[in-house]
Amino acid sequence: MRTMSQIPQVKIPATYLRGGTSKGVFFSLQDLPESARAAGPARDALLLRVIGSPDPYGKQTDGMGGATSSTSKAVIISKSSQPDHDVDYLFGQVSIDQPFVDWSGNCGNLSAAVGPYAIANNLVDPSRIPDNGVVEVRIWQANIKKTIIAHVPITDGMPQETGDFELDGVTFPAAEVQVDFMDPADDDGGSMFPTGNLIDDLEVPGIGTLKATLINAGIPTIFLNADAIGYLGTELQDDINNDDAALAKFETIRAYGAVKMGLISHIDEAVSRQHTPKVAFVAPAADYTASSGKAIAAADIDLLVRALSMGKLHHAMMGTAAVAIGAAAAVPGTLVNLAAGGGELVAVRFGHPSGTLRVGAQAVKKDGNWSVTKASMSRSARILMEGWVRIPGDSF
Image (tube, rainbow, N blue to C red; front, side):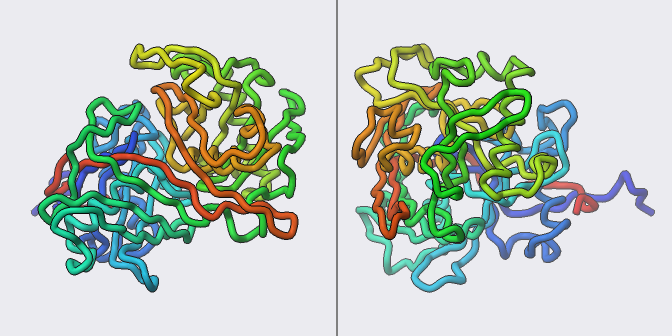
């Protein structure tokens, strides 16, 4: 007779992928245990155990997570339920030290890995895949109900993963995957600026009234001026992540910004909505040294941006936040646009802690409301491991 401590592990087919500057465990929906194929406590419990959360040590040693927001991620892929799409892509941001999975937004970096995964797992019509060339994989992002188009290079009928495209924040070069985020702004409010303003006065008790651009494009984001909160915009991770007071200040700003954006009704709700909104701060271009030691020249960038994810300064830039940066930069008069020099901008190259990234966006104004029809950037993706993950059978 088995005791509770002798319950066997279950094997679940899974693939571990890097997409952009993130990593995640990918599952095909039909491979999940039946109780985890639908949203709910069983699915969340399964993913938490796979990733190794909650972990009070903050290391995720007993799971697949990498102890950072960029590496504590799970993805579920299925054949698309939407017309003219190949796959549905559902993203879960797994908390490291708390027992919850945040489903409120997308991961832009892992979006680059969805196309290669879908092709490798026979989820794209084979007749659409050339022997050599590029295939457009049409992705339905199920968290935010938006279309993403990944341009996946194909060699000998399979996704090309190696190449000479270099992405700051990723050590080794790989094949370039262009990702287009179609109509990335939130549909609900009629404008991607939830307050209707390009710049708001954000009142934060104990901190003051801050100028802020509140935007919902790619992911809800609160943009601030670096100098208004005591920064230069050239900071690296240790400058902020080792400062508990600074992190608490950013979380307070995030909570009050979330209320002003209409994402939550009270600041207390922010603790259970860690993935969104993001907080970022901008500054005019300046020279700095990236975390790799690489010198970044002011002449090579349009502005500086630093962003926080899951309570920490991100080591590079979240892909969804890059969409927000591109969208905000394309609208004259936002803090992002002004930091980049102002005027009409169709693309910007910004400096982040690991280096630089270029993002383009097409903005239009109709009936007084701004919208972005497409935001584009180049990422790369690579399958790191495939097979099965194992978790104790009583985990979910």
